[in-house]
Length: 136
Image (cartoon, rainbow, N blue to C red; front, side, top):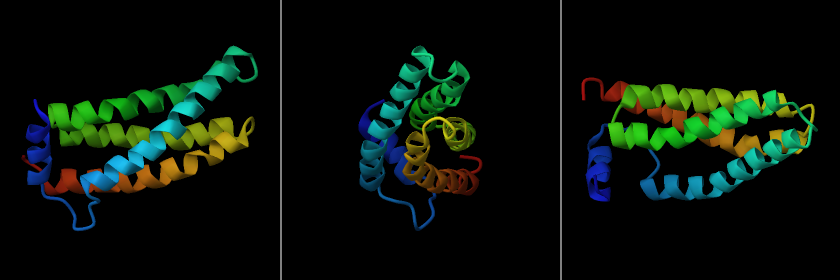
């Protein structure tokens, strides 16, 4: 599938009027992914050093995997319902990450705020698109 194929499909979907442009979405992820990756690596290193339990890394790993799976599910499989489940997992694991890491590294928890804000909007957007495009 080439870039124009998935883009044409996405553009053909019924979307709310407040849907950000693909360019805005791309810029936001270019800002968030380094934060996500740095936090993930930091907690893995802290667990490897024995400073935190490996259980604290679990939500970070689940979140990262679910985040990476969203694009292939949404644009590869073109499965809006499964993409909605996936983004809900991403949203829930952000909360889980912040709660799990807060007692140990509050800055890492606070660093989740922009990610949480964006994914909250993206989750609502995904649910809206899924609902408006039932049967497609």
